[in-house]
Amino acid sequence: MSTFTASERRSCKRMWVQHVNVDAEAMAVKLDAIRAGSAHWTAVHDVLEVGVRNRLEAARNAALQRDSVPGRLSNWWRGTLIDCAYKNLHAAEWLIVGLYSDEQVEAEIPEAVARVEGGLRRDDPRRADALDLLEGQPGDPARRERLAKAVEIGFCATDSEHAALRNFRNTVLTGAVALTAVLAVFVGFVYRNPTDVPFCFSPTGKAMVCASGAPMPSNHDVITVALLGALGGLLATIMALRNIQGTSVPYDVPKALAVLKLPLGALCAIGALIAIRGGFIPGFSDLDSQPQILAYAFGFGVAQQLVAGLVDRHAQGLLSGAPGKQSATTRPERHARRRRSTRASVPPHDGLHAVGGAQN
Picture 1 (cartoon, one colour):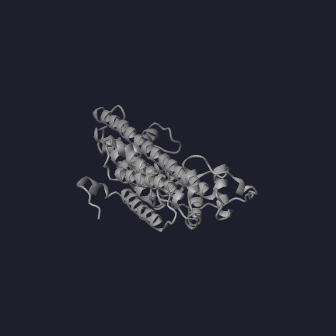
Picture 2 (picture 1 turned 180 degrees about the vertical axis):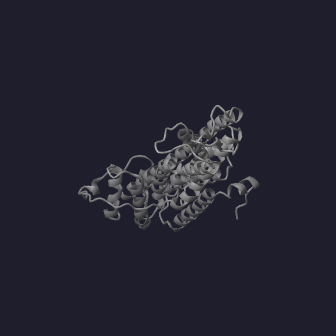
Picture 3 (picture 1 turned 90 degrees about the vertical axis):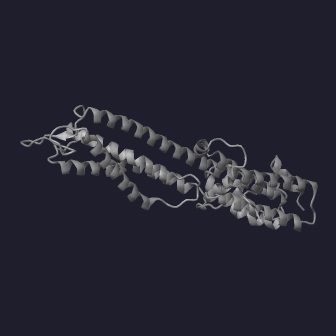
């Protein structure tokens, strides 16, 4: 039974760490079973076994932070440990193909093909080559090498999709931080100089009304408008949750979007009231009362979803197109394709996969 240090136990609380550990342990058991059941174990198989076990150990070390790693914030931002853990786990996935029996090769083909289908464009020749594995003949000498290559390509595509998702999350968070900083400077300036950017209206025949209820511009006006806009942004965030699908990716994009919508709501409320006061928005006249000003501030905070919705749709597209870090993926509809007549003559790929040809 494995024992963990206090730091490793903290790491195990993260779901992706559990995924890596479970997959690594399962693959180690599979490797032991393959060795025990093989009647023709060779020196080539010894090399592959060492390679698989080394990759599995490296994946565990990265997941449990056993190796020297950058700071927690840097690792969270760059995804260093996540990428290291899964790249090593995926390398073990395609290396172990060289140890599979013919029956295991046939069993792994559908999953490998599904992964490639989900990760590559339809006009990618590597996708067509992977699809041909479904129609090949068992025992084809090149079949094992082509499967190993398909496994490698499929996982590389998955890793690229998750890198794009991480970059998107970082971009959203960077935008949220920059927007919050600029908004804080603006609010601080108007708080000290309320007459420079007044949130007050002078309806015809009535006294001036301001967002804070004072008869003249007050330093509380901008605070009131910004907070109501942020509350509207929070409401829009809650309403948008119904469209967010669950995902097993280790990068929490929905939370990043929620962080963005709060300052965006405040910005929309402030900007909209300034535009109304300046007569910039056709059809809007000066507001008549403080409750009306507050209602408009909150409403425009909610209306920021019109802008943020574009970001939400892009995020949902990335999430739906990115399978979990495990091998599961949604199989897209296939286009009709021409069967290769010379498939049996395709030579094995060069590189590490060629060692699989020594399998019994």
